[in-house]
Length: 147
Image 1: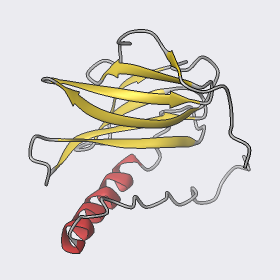
Image 2: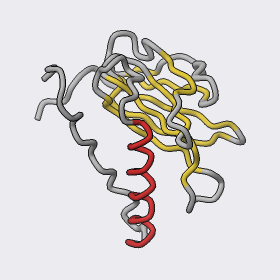
Image 3: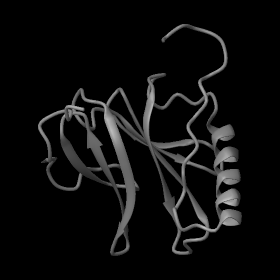
Image 4: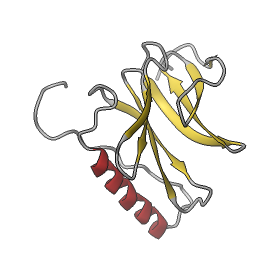
């Protein structure tokens, strides 16, 4: 609910890689908890719920880089500097008025990209550095599956 005051809801802990060594996973989770503390109180999505998270990784797959990408129910995507928690860039209306349901960071050649999936049934690709769109939205489904 949207009541005021009180502590923010807890964030879900990432599961990590299935094949990741337990000690490495523990170290990664510890770093993510520190990053979460740096972001506490930040409202990149206008106070709306965060619905997707992705971390950029450096060339060294063991180390977490300094970028966290979040998607929100308000259809925005934000990139944070994890050393400071600062908001680096934000794209409003990434999927029109539809929530961002998932996002991932990947390298294409030497360029880092964000791929987002929206409740509108589209996938979009963005340049990580400035969240400029790369191509047109791709329609991949027509709505929610029936469970």
